[in-house]
Amino acid sequence: MQEAAALLIATTVERRKWPTLVVLSLAELLAMSVWFSASAVVPALTTAWSLDESGRAWLTMSVQIGFVVGALGSALLNLADRIPSRRLFTIAALLAGAATALIPLVARGVVPALVLRFLTGMVLAGVYPVGMKIMATWAKADRGLGIGLLVGALTIGSASPHLLNAFGGIQNWQFVLYLAGGSAALGGLVNAALVEEGPYRTPAPRFDWRQAGAILRDRPTMLANTGYLGHMWELFAMWSWIAIFFLDSFAQRGIAPETASLAAFAVIAAGGPGSLLAGKLADKVGRTTITIASMVISGLCSLLIGFLFRGNPLLLVGVAVVWGFTIVADSAQFSACVSELCDPKLTGTALTLQTSMGFLLTLITIRLVPTLVRWVGWEWAFAFLAIGPVVGIWGMLVLRRSPEASKLAGGNR
Image 1 (cartoon, rainbow, N blue to C red):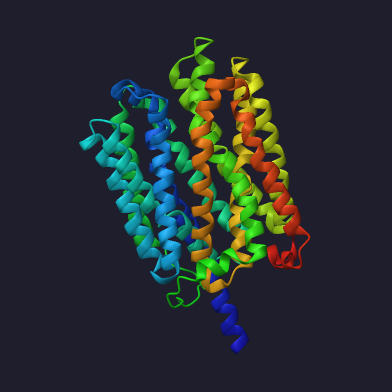
Image 2: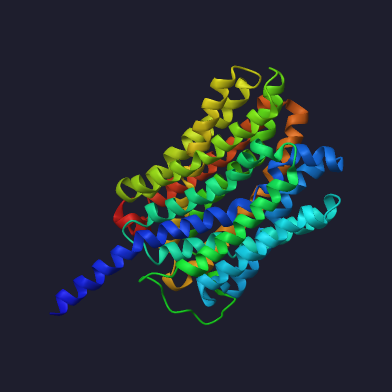
């Protein structure tokens, strides 16, 4: 009788699991559409606000800094583990949407826009890692696939402003920001109405600011974070500047600016299916195997892409799409690794700490790429990003050889 009851409960949970995770991923896609909303309309804002190289970079960097501040604060206060996840996600998404919509409404120059972008990043610390925590409460044996689905949705959400830009944003940048802000608010409402934590949730721990330090001292978790940091060294610099790269390359061949926005959308959005496929494979063949393979390919693409600048547009975009596919494929697996290696009661804090370190690192490469373009041209600027995959591969190789790697993906290293 007890076995029949347990089987009924397990069947009910499994039936609710994937519909919930799909809706959560949709909410994440909508909420994260604000991340690159201002970056996507940089060409229009450059004209409207007379932006220089520094101003263009800061439109993205301000979001990164805000996210780091929000994530570090959340990690130190254990907010992601102490506040109900659905409530935190919803409030954060609504605030992110409001901060984005306020830019065209009240900003008449770059300074107020940077303040609002900082606030957007800060509250998004309650969306991205919290969404991964909710996902982890539903998925165990297939956690790589679950978090891969979520990160894939986040990736497409991040790419969406470039699509909006291609269909109207070139002439009307306000339209892009209003629509992105509305999408984020909708994502928060979808989450509030339809998403709940799953059967693997743990009781909220007591507040202890030392928990973040304990995570930083845990060697296996930090090896997984080393892989993540190598991945982040490359990822956001590519995402931030690939549209400008296309714009400059296509201009040499008389190709319309809208085509550059479409190409940027295709490249970034390619990470969506890449993340999903990598998640499915990682659960079966191993997390370290998939992350190492992804970083090898993405690192090679970062070295190769500059040689195609001003070249055949189809070949250029083709290689860039492969880069976009693989540069995100490993992302969810680093988070899955951390969720499997850390104390289950601190999953939210561990994931928030991981993302805060990664986004802090991105400030270096986002700012450095335009400087490298000025020094060595687009032909070599992206090659510098290959340093990240090299370091990340080293971290995952060391983790692979450690005894704790048996905790990954049910023993699939």
